[in-house]
Image (cartoon, rainbow over all chains, first blue to last red; front, side, top):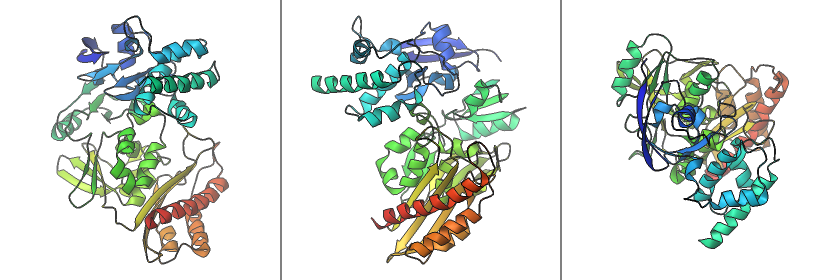
Length: 159
Length: 285
């Protein structure tokens, strides 16, 4: 079958691309739009490294077809910082050294931003359950969790 | 693979009737696209139903019953306060499936149509007395959820048939439901046993009940004997023991690395007791 033309919005920009119907949104973001922040870990929705927001819902972009993006709004890690300013979560991840190899980090940041928008004051348990679908094989999670709880506290104070 | 995104059910049915080769309907894709990605099954025709109006809506009808569109994801169910207050067992069962990311996409209808005997939402739906609306070339009809599963990975749906919505009955004021499952860890796993119970209480006595078990036979089942064991009782120890025995007696499980036949059979009885106690408490609150 011929390629499908998809019109969508990525990080606020209206974008069009052509894709094969079997190509995932992750393939399209990385290979057609050069947005390589979302990573392919497992490719089957288990690891969360490809997390993006699709019209307000946190999803694994490896389990979304590119064609499904038609008319949707997509938010990726590339849209997280504003101009030269990192998002408070990104700042705090650096401060806490909440990453080692970094492959899981974009997905964890996108997932955590979605959590804090929904719940600005999560408990440690709530953070851990929310991130159960984001696997990290380096850090043991502890620094990630502490960085998130500290960011949440800072953001509550600032708001 | 050909991808279609029809804007009406009639168009979707037409495409599926004309389709040659393996055809799949796509809503959340958390099973269909995993199978595609893992090279287990690549459909020749994929029909995305999400552009059809109302598939993403949760509606309460004027008679108090509910209509949940086929593409409503678990996260949306969980955010719906009224639905969750009335059918906590159904909403909690769906919420047990997968990660936050999976919850953003996975649907009740997908869980049902995937045909897994271990599907978490299915025992809760069967216990609730839910039906699904099936659209076919001959029109639409409502079918009880327990009549949809056939065997592992297979449903009773025919070519050209499509489920448009899940229908939950009106919640009576003296009713409550619950779903419990056993997994070897705290989350993100497949049920070793699942049990859904919905019951009503009048003057302290169980006036009606439905009990459903998952992962203990080749499909999710409604266990009438287990419901009969508690109807007319105050859910005392004797009734709970009878419920537990009836639930275990209905089990014909497989032996695998996640649970032996003996273990699954025993756990079915334990979960039935515990789920009944939660449902009873909810019915009286």
